[in-house]
Image (cartoon, rainbow, N blue to C red; front, side, top):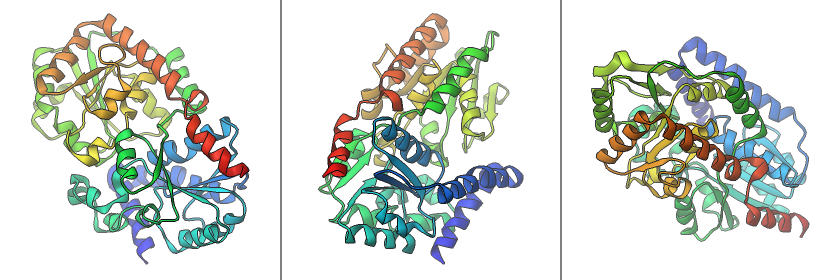
Length: 397
């Protein structure tokens, strides 16, 4: 019954975000299609990634990670956690990676079968959702989720697996998260979010074939992933007020489930709200802007755990980013070279202003950002050799 309510909560969340007809289209064309595809696709190879969803997290941490491993000679498949036949797959593979997976009765049976054969279980997370105390402290949980959506976070997503002594290895996205997971006594591999070959094809096609707007406007873009980013965006509202007042040629492009009724509404004629779109179209939305913004609340553990994906997605399209000066973005961005890091409001306003005023700087910084992304953040050119070696050792042992 609980699992049914959780599914209902997810469906209602999509309908609330996209509207009824667009939401139903998303559910059937994206969610249901991928669910059925994984059920009826054969499981082959040595590694099976079990994912609890089909959204952005699953895109990067399950499907893209599977491609990464396959490109490096480690045969990997992906399966949805809701597959009614899931427990059968314990016989098929040697390593099982659980990505943001609730331990339902179906999942519990698979885990039981894996343990009976003494096979490897790896806990994978890209967020602090595995510990309920972190997610419950967020504005997203307190004010944006309905009761059914909150059910999946009652104990934390995958908390039972992460705390299980049998599970000795975790993978995650950032140094910050790795330190937290390590405090539980786990061996942790940092496997950054990377772009698939398809992502590279889509973005290269955009760069080659879709011209940029040639008017005098400079477009700032903030692309929200979930409603949890409302407070992140609000954290730079004062800096954006200064920018919008000083530069009358600036437009602000906002995408995702974001509240826009705030002090910036004074400039509503210069604010463009973009609707939710499929991932390939999402890259076209990024391409519309000249400068990407990546704010986060500093000092908040849930926010500090976020990856540098807003920098890498923009960088893939040669769009420079101004990002919060925290550990994750400081590790990803060489300040002043392939992006800007900003701390207080004055620094946010100053560095955004420099990019607004200097088109050559925007172009040069965007080029450098793309160079870095292609070198460090693609499946075919990744550098996670310690993790690959560990998996090969388990597989051949």
